[in-house]
Length: 342
Image 1: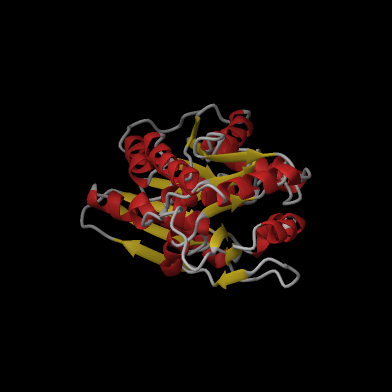
Image 2 (image 1 turned 90 degrees about the horizontal axis):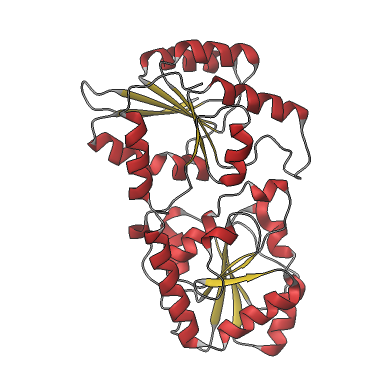
């Protein structure tokens, strides 16, 4: 178990419980707000909790000392959940994935039971999108939308209309767990290579696609390089299949593309349909032919790329998909006096 303490003397105490210290959920759902909460007078502790009994006991002890306990995605057995509920003065449960399902999208009795147990125990539930909120409200009416957000200041603006060396970069940012969505488009990429040789696929991840005919550039992901990789791209892509698991996704890569001022091409699935305005900030597609047409159209239209990218950045800010907007939402609840909301 790892501790990350951000202390301020005589501060109210917020304990964040997560499964890891540096995963994307921890960073984007809680970590990026630490400095703002600290400035507002909070002492914040992020605790990465494993499955060992000693760690769980330490977690319960820390929960007793906190004014608010904020659980990120973690679910527990009945005994640990009851002890955590008894220890916490105020308990928030936060989810940004369909953790009540198997990753295939199929039902999972065990996961659903653990999910409902935590939701019912919480004073309030923060859900990353409407799909997650609807499921949570079946068990706890004190559920509200807390979208995943980004700090736009961390993303220098790209110029998607500027082309160096006759290369137009499609960019995809992700991980091995979502590789399958990108691989699904290999036939589309191969076809596009013949029609537009200037296209290149920039993969910001820990893998490449060895069978791909399209030229590719792999960039090993790190927090330090991701914003630069996006700032030097031209079109952001977000392939996705439609099933219950993907409907629980909260559109992080789309937000990153928008923050960088890139036009986005995405499958018309889940929350991506809400974030992207079709033919204004990007293009929503439903099949391979539409994928090919959307990418080819943007590749051949410099000004359209610029207009869509700029409109996407504006939409990100105007629709409150920003760090500052969520910080205000978080502070509003942390400062209120109500306790049990059920």
